[in-house]
Picture 1: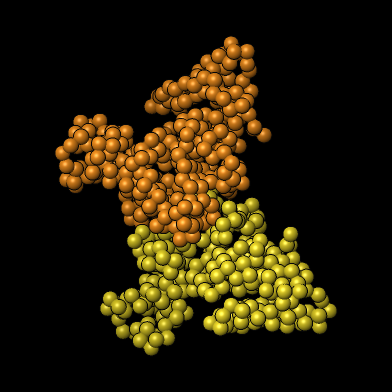
Picture 2: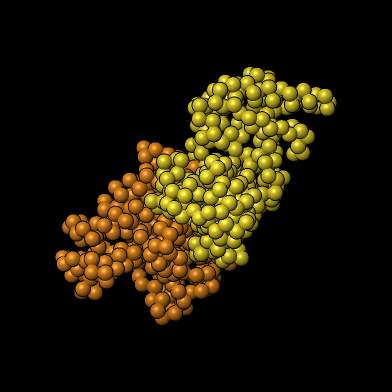
Length: 307
Length: 307
């Protein structure tokens, strides 16, 4: 979990990172979060400042008004867990909770690549694939069903690879960290993984998405193929959304977006091929420049501007 | 082309239907439209009323502010044609132009099945597949690029059937009037069309989407299969949009929605299967009850409420 001290102008003054320790149960995770926040509050006081509010971004289904983590793939034991309430009780400061891709969206919109773009779709490429929609300069929440912008779970390949969500052929099953790893394992299982650094990584049991990226940069054909497939899937999913929303901007963030140079060309090719409404030149796909700071700034912004 | 006299309450007082005669050129079509409107204006006067404005719904890319038909698949010779201006000149009354699926959306929203639903996606099943988005009770226009809600051109089957738009595997290539006819022709070409009423229809050269529907009602397996595929494609495309928009209502209209009983079950099955965010019970797919009157009422409403 990442925590930060953010001032009113959106500047990050302190930044921390620790583990959630979710295997020890949700209360333990909540306690760790409280400890991190208390420590940052103390730091703020030492700097002569006062913390007004805390913004939380959590992956998964969130109930904003009740402050619940309804379901989080990263924190599976936090089902209907009142994380915002626990934190508020623990530190005595108002807490706002949002989906992690939505806080990414807010951060990018006020301080990042998306400044000045009225309508856009955001995609966070990490272990999974998250997403958000900014419409008329605001986070779109739809019917407030606890999810929105989940482009990672739109189907790009019917009957394709089984996704963690239970559906088959989701974008996430081709464009996420776990999908890159799964792709190598599938190739190994079917005997398509020839000897080389990627094979060695797989055999060593130390296979990660980052490892697949390093192999792709060394021109490993299987690794390149996986990034090609990722770009293809992203291009198709983005094209489908541009076609329905009548918009033309997408912004990609998250750790796996570091593989940009390996997937952006197939992405743009796929986008052009699957868009019948817009020409290639009219569509803009940008990489987030704030990195993990987008979510930190976005969460702080939501906290400061809470109703 | 359909024309109607609509009062302030959204009631249709007169309704007409004539051909566009587009093969004789866009000016001829425009003249026919002017004649129809003049005749309705005269009728209104006889009834003691006065026409305030005219609302036009046209399939294709529309430039609202300039009153242009940018490109219409049904009226191919009307490229960048100033239809609104011609009509305004011809009758001396303000004219508003919109995409046909958008006027359908407005009509359904104010007078049809969609009353009271804040966010929904509309799909018009005709020769082609049109669509619209109603967000926060208003027609969503996105970046005002001349198209929006074009769910018919989202990809449901990569490398699938070639669509009229040039892409492969669009929803329209499985869920439109032309797709039903194309499906029969393909089956015939590959020798999969066994003898029976559908074969006879094909051989007679009188094959229409309506004919395919009649055969499906008579339990022709090939015809049923085509409607099954249509439902599957619609369910997948709607699921993808619910997942991203965080909404749960869709409304289907257009002439081919008359085949409802042949595609709604596979549609709902596909929708449930391809939605990882919502359970089957949470999703609502409704049939337009206004028929072709939705577009007439919607166009009139836009004209009355023009800025």
